[in-house]
Image (cartoon, rainbow, N blue to C red; front, top):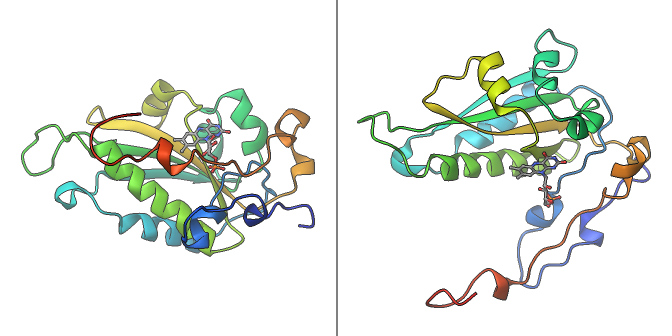
Length: 199
Ligand SMILES: Cc1cc2nc3c(=O)[nH]c(=O)nc-3n(C[C@H](O)[C@H](O)[C@H](O)COP(=O)(O)O)c2cc1C
């Protein structure tokens, strides 16, 4: 796609890191083309290998490919602003995580943290596949997600993820076209300090 943005032209790291971290960003422009089940399984495979407290693997992923009977059920959960661009996504994923430990039923204080790591694995795997993009979303109806998808009380609703093929920003509604830019970050001094909390 000629007008696709190269995040490496916008983002510069202050210290040496792998390009994979800079190349992962959250485009809204998606082409509407399908992503195969095999490609989707590669994303879940990466998620599967995330670390977790006591190897609990709290994450669970529910998904719908576009052009299937489940798609509309997932799509209807999204707020209007997300529907505006997710109509061109290939797969919608709902991420939920188990709140209690399987071993002893006690509350698991880090279930969301662990599941976040699995989500990041999934997103970084997509970066390695070049023609698959992902975009995390908090903008959806959590109660409806639980109800419509039958998520038990012992699982927290975490986020949704749109997966798709990269598209052209010109296909986005105008309000979103201007936002279609890889974002920048706070400097390290604003996020990491030696010793006590001095931010
Ligand atoms: C858990 C989560 C929820 C998000 N919710 C939304 C959302 O509802 N709609 C949206 O357009 N972007 C959403 N985003 C995308 C963020 O705005 C984006 O990740 C952030 O601005 C950093 O940009 P980057 O991902 O391109 O590096 C979400 C991201 C995450 C991780």
